[in-house]
Image (cartoon, rainbow, N blue to C red; front, side, top):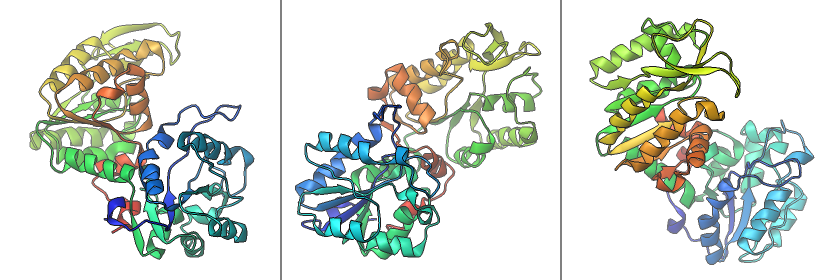
Length: 391
């Protein structure tokens, strides 16, 4: 896979796939610009090389139709301020008007194409649509790790149509950090897996058992594992159809000498609400109609001890309903423990990164991945179509 520095970019038309699917408020103001700022090193490099920069991205789920609220206009304006130069928005991402706008680009200028997903052909990886996008460029750069698990036209299709192609600095950094953590880790390697569902992370769990020394399981998904071991978990969220699978995973871990740590106590509540009545109980004492919404202090102590000697930590998924203050302490405590560990640490997934940001520890994590689904797919041991297409 070539990277930016392997390519001749001077004066070339460079089509760069970015992920500017940023959240906005009702006034059309961007509320979190992380996905824009993480691409700035790539953009600055392209501009230093005097390239003609053509940006393409999606935003929201317009379902193949033009929806004004998903226009990339506000993003183009915001990026223009960061780059301190105009970033005009093309009227579309393909078609005669776009071709004309691209033909008028001068060296060191930037053009943003309108939302790719205004066309159903984008998500269908339509060959003709891919060709239209590819015809705009002499060089194609993928710097959108967060969508690289999708075989879409702008991610995989275009790359097969352009001879000169490579990875931007963000994509390069994502791949390098992940492989440092998973393929050549310093040990002990500890995985922290949380979140709501076992089903969404089943393949990741199976693959990680082949690689890690220890695994911490928290969040609502821990309830399924606890129930599979005979614990009554009250009204907690459980995937009953996966009880046998959870039990089998724990047996596999034991056979591989991988230590798996489950909560020993929880913060239980009488309802899923910020003002719920809650209390700390051991996993043996969860009241019948109550639900576990966070790990308890004994679990926090145990998990922190597990992390104390870790040399590499991979984290995906929170330990509880951290968006509610009453159930945030477990996740916050782990964030502090990961940040203070003498380890290479990488986190992935929107909830994990949001929790780290909330804890104030973002600067103390080695790397926070910008991709949820793509990060999880790598954890499953699979490759990414967007990366494969650059080979």
